View: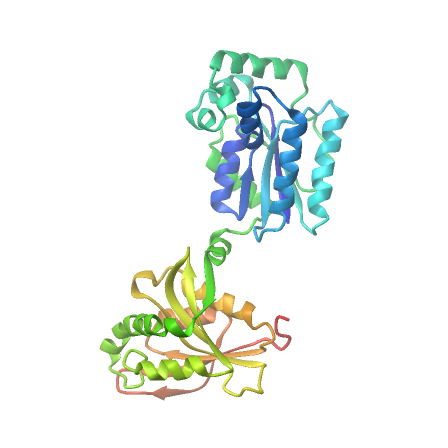
Length: 355
């Protein structure tokens, strides 16, 4: 689990930049005031020990998730040794999981920070800053009493980036951080977490069948192939469901059934080769990357498989692209079905499997 520490003076933009980073990376934001504000609201005063305890619980639970990492924002006083100890303890905690820690220091002049101290986003997320007069005076006092900006060359950490964001928009700052550290785009990771495969139950076969017909009917109307799943009977689906060595799964996105996939073996004794047939997504959910996510989930379900096989329609380039994106390659000869449609075989070979 990775950690990104965004350090900087009050109202420098740590939270706002963190928000923008969550939009373009697979990091979640845990800004400093997420624990401070509830404690202030309940107790009426800054209960530092409790705030630290609550933060620790969040860190512990977050490290059990599948996210790439967590963004934590912190106003560090560089002239206080205990602050360095706290930052090191956080870093050690995440590095112990095999993760990487990234350090970003934002700096901006006081005039700009006083302007940002009044912004709508800041006041919406930090109730304790809504008395502007007091908040402004607190910011000036913190600047006067603590060293909130590091000296040149003082930071010893490997993955460190300092940005003067006085005149830099939050989204531009976030992109600069992402590019500097080479962080992965969040699109595929987020989708994979939103898509699940849930095994189909026998009493759900009629719904499965209706979804299959609806999904394949546009292709049948286009090609009129007599082997189309759109026109096979429900008993064929029941037979496929009953095979000991094959299983149907509903493809779920955000809790909704959006398609289905059948995976397994033709030979009950052959566990290293698996077929995907059929795989379908309801028309209204197609072209959203769900098929890609479903195939990745299938790989996870059968990690021992070293060869995956399927076939698709040559005249459907989007389908071919999907399977090739998943690591499949074309094999064998083309199989004409009629004058409009040709089937092609695809295989994905992994000699070591995923187990």
